Amino acid sequence: METGYNREFLEKLAKARMPFGKYKDRYLTELPEAYLVWFRQKGFPGGTLGKQLEAVLEIKANGLEQLLRNIRNITE
Image (tube, rainbow, N blue to C red):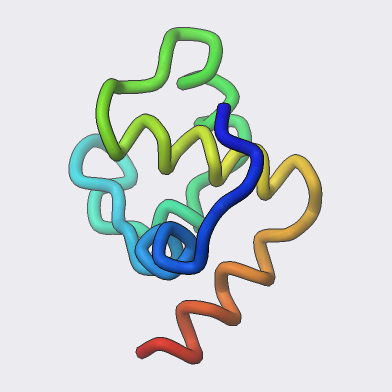
């Protein structure tokens, strides 16, 4: 997993929404950590969404989700 996130990636991540399932249209940053852990165990989807979900889990695990909320509020 990429450990250094650039500004553009973080701005997109802060605004990204879940495109399907039970949590459709929720911000990825607002997904329950247990749901993200389930994805890690089953395998993240491919492409951008998988990278974003993996990043959100890493950010939440380190207690930094407020950072993404702040970015979202500033860029809206």
